[in-house]
Length: 297
Image 1: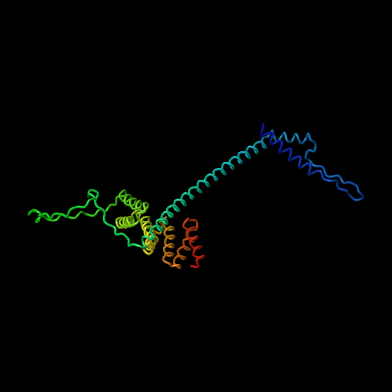
Image 2: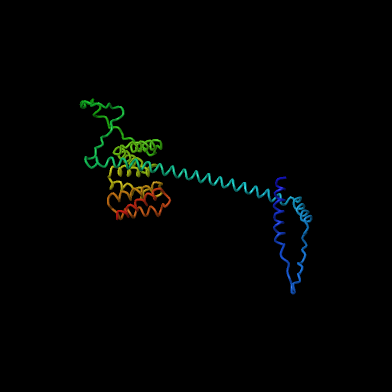
């Protein structure tokens, strides 16, 4: 058998090594007379050693040990492969999250640079209320005054509807998604209005922390840094357990930097690195702190 042969070879090698180690030079006594070494009870002839090896092999002990060793090596190799696979998958997930964040950040920065000159040259546009869906876009003639019938003057006014107490999750999600889509399309004034309306309608909603953060982002892009700083502070104060907290701290530090509030910017960015050292926001904060050090801020 293969395992039997392996065990036999291993045992013969071990016995050969022990035999070579036992071939010591003779001990010489006084006057140069050699002293005989004491004999051992172990077999010294080749036949005896082979017989001993055969007995061990027949008992199956060595074969069982070799089989167990092979099994352990196979299991160890399998576990190492699984660990490497999980590590590769985790690294891929982290890289995709970082790329997504950096992509959004690059888009907002490009929009910020593009809007910087127009914002400084002309006043911000005034947002007009949108027309209802069934109202045509063309100009409408002035309303014609109508005379109410006599019975309408004496009729009591309709009772006000009772406010709805339950929040529809579907409507809340649609409202948030509509505001976020405006932000992605670069329609920042409309996005600001939409996020403000969302927060007024759903102050404690599921997406209130995200809406507050993206409201600050929209104002940051339009260079309204003071208002953006207030929005990011609201994220930290009202939603301390939100996943948006590290990003809000990063953009709060950026807003202080743009407002030339160097001490506040350094304090927020340093706190971000201490609380969330392994986050992408912490690495970006370290880059901004290094930039501030080079600028002597």
